Figure 1 (tube, rainbow, N blue to C red):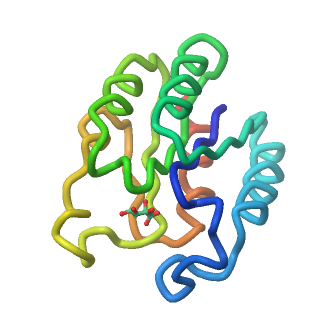
Figure 2: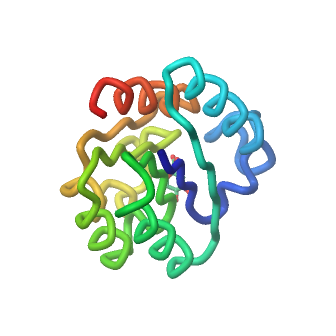
Figure 3: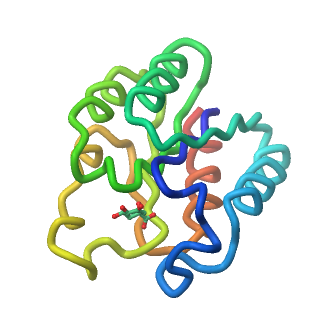
Length: 140
Ligand code: DQA
C-alpha cells in the first residue's frame, strides 16, 4: 500500500508540536512499516510538498498498490486535482488528519478528498495512521 504525506508533513515533530505532536515523519513511517509487516502489508511511504508529485504518486497507485492511506495536509482543503486522482483508485482510500480539523479554523472544515475516501480518520494524532492501516488490512 501507498502511504502518502502532503505538504509540510516533512516538518512533523518541529512544526507546531502543540497541534501535531513531537513524533517525526520518520517515526511515523517506521511505525507504519513495522505495523504493516505485522498485518501483511508492504508500506511504501512518500512525502511531497508539490501537488503534481502527489497526483503522480496516486496515478502509480492505480495499478501498483492495493490501497492508499493519505494525509493530503493543506491540499485537502484546496485540491480538486488530488481528489480526482483519488477517485480513480479502485481499492480503499483512507484519509488521515493528525489534528481534529473540525475544531480548528473554518477553512479546514471542508475536505475535497472526503467524498471519495473509503474512510476518514481525524484528530487521533499519529495513531490515526495505525488505525488506517488496520482498516486497510481488513479491506484488501
Ligand atoms: C492536517 C490538517 C491540515 O489542515 C493541515 O493543513 C495539515 C495537516 C493534519 O494532519 O491535521 O498540514 O492534514
